[in-house]
Length: 204
Image (cartoon, rainbow, N blue to C red; front, side, top):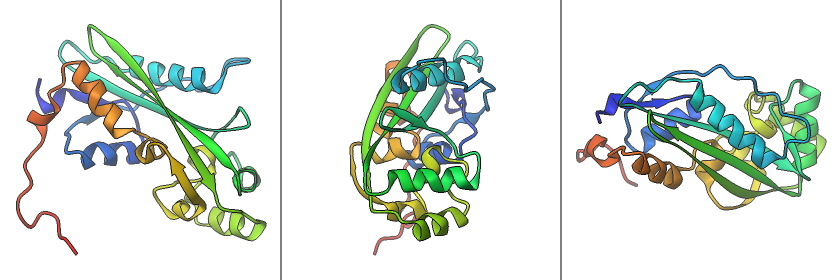
């Protein structure tokens, strides 16, 4: 299977960057799916359904593998999605402040012959967040398009006091599980990786 046969079914620049971080080449196709939760749908069921729906919205062809993912922030059993307004975003940050919440990321790999989904749960504890901090962070614009109203890989990292579990899953794509999933679907990831040349990465 050639490197061009891996398809990322996502418009997320963060997921694309994580795949590039582990040396993989891929195509991007943005799926169109209805992300409305079903009545009484639990967060774990929702995020896995979304991941499968995104993978199913892209035709892998005969020799390709589609990789899709979905991430939600869960507090007190409630899904905190992308904030629809300034007030909603600030409200989410204030709710999360000083508390532990769960980040669920589901990944799905789909080929012409098989489909596999894996769920990763990570616990994140926030520092105390007052109105001034919430407003200052919201003003950066970073959290407006992210689940829970924050991005841990950016300025939002100052809000996370501790993380129990996978950091890359909170960003949007759990790397060890992604590697295993692709391997199980017959993707030879190591044959796609280009060796680094001396001087490619500087050291301090």
